Length: 308
View 1: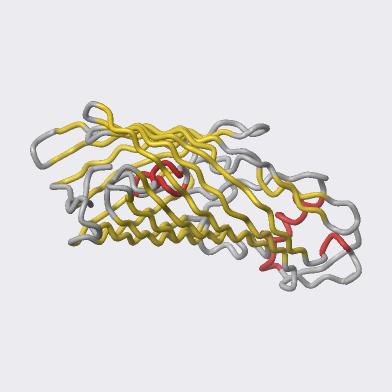
View 2: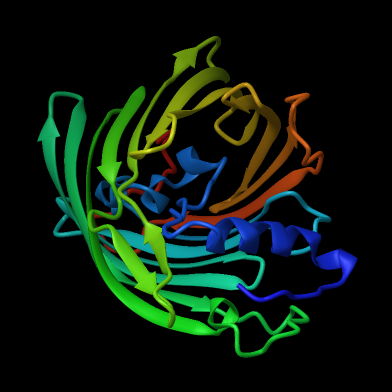
């Protein structure tokens, strides 16, 4: 690899690039979301239409705010119950940026729901493609012929699956959103692993403290080969089904505050997250914003927003 020079403000990008090009294969991690319980469709296609309503959500997360080139994710998705609430269809568009690389993903999902005693079991599939784009124009590269810094654009097909068991008091889900590992190759023989299979297992339960106050603990486990398990532990209180406040930790290395309010059929959510590990050199906060709409559109849709 030839020498290159960049400004000090590009320190983070250079760190990422050094990691990316010093090894033949580097795995791309799935985007991280702290408000996954508000909209499990972001990681499990079985949630499509699960609440018997029409839903649309816009989510934005900035990781390590204030650090140039830090990760950021925009997720738009919409899903609705169909077939008299026996099925669900969904659409999701994600843009995930890290430095001067960008992944743009499009997915269509379908779920089928089986009614059980006071609960439902949903099976879901999603299919779509992800477009990888690397544009290093922001770097001041001394040798423009170095193929390690050549622009790269490639599109890969993928599919995923999931299952969810839920009632008015609990929800448990297992999913693999991307079943097909994929790599992209540069001129010069360098290979970048676009993503691996990520496994998600989450669960939540509602405890009625009083008629108006509910306590909702939850747990999310993420796993992929070659990396340690990641665990999100969340504990929140819901007041009159309209206002939610909670605390969470990710692997006891970062900690966050979650706030949510529902105004008519519109949900507003915000997460403030900061590192809690003394070993971390990235002492920057992260922020996540969500706005969502849930409403009955078809004649057989529910008209009241449920706990899950």
